[in-house]
Length: 244
Length: 225
Image (cartoon, each protein chain N blue to C red):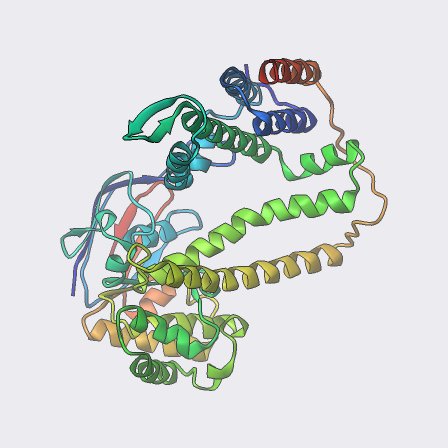
């Protein structure tokens, strides 16, 4: 069931899920967390494909890290031996699976956060007593990240079209190119930030001043249910994860 | 010089903020562009002019159909390979300027393609002069005016001599002097057998350039004439 959820329940769910993701120690708790994450995505009306879109470009890096985890973690029962060398162990496989679960859950939480509008985020932060300046800066920062990524992508595309072949380039040259590409992107982002700050000041905006709000956030029944559900899930997770 | 063919191209952007699928930008677009001509791509905001440019430059790939340059399918080529045939001056040129000195910016592509740094520098200085940028050569590229940045981006492509040059909404923000220089270069390139595509809102510009008009409408309808 999809409902127009209150941003505070989304923030609470994200807080619970990401905290649990960092604490995964047992296979069962990873499964429980995966189920909870899928339920949260469905409850907040976020498509299940959304986290995959976020992760799409990270797949090669994730595969490399997973393989390294499998090969380097030697704990547990050996599953594949090369002479006397323990090539693959249950501990290595478990570490790779937990890493994949963590990344998937964090990407899902990113999708949930992304579904919160700018002003809703500010209202939610205000209602939980976060100083307005801090909330505004975080929201603006989050708004700028995709722009910065887009600018860097354009610079990188331009460099590649003019002959910079990333696939054949050595690591040092590639890193130098990334640094070069970061420069114009940062300068453009800063100049854009300066423009926004000018526009805001000209329109009389002052983040330090007390303000009133026309719109008020209201928690619906499903939002209230998220709070005990999150707490119960957290307790169940801890019980499964840290049982002897 | 190579011919560009759009063959039954279908394209839509993956998703919006709510991750809902977006409507199709192009629905079976078929078009052939011949080199040695200037084309002006006209149409309202959001009709897909920049998308057309990005498809042609291999920055994005069609969902269905093919974009061919000289018979080679763009989506199967790497960006450095596409760049040998298509150069693009983006809507916001500051994003594509990587080096801090204009001369290095123009020399960048030549060096990447294997030219000696000194020789590339000499070529670059010559190109800067022909684009009226000699005086700005000491200015940090991100501090140049938009008109100068557009001319610099164009100069950094013309030294590479691609078969096609795309100017994505580059002319609208130019003053008369800069516009004159750029239009002169466009005419020169077309006369040398290169193809040029200018993305614009101005039908008058197409008349002024004597270019072929490609009029696009929202939903992917295209009229050439």
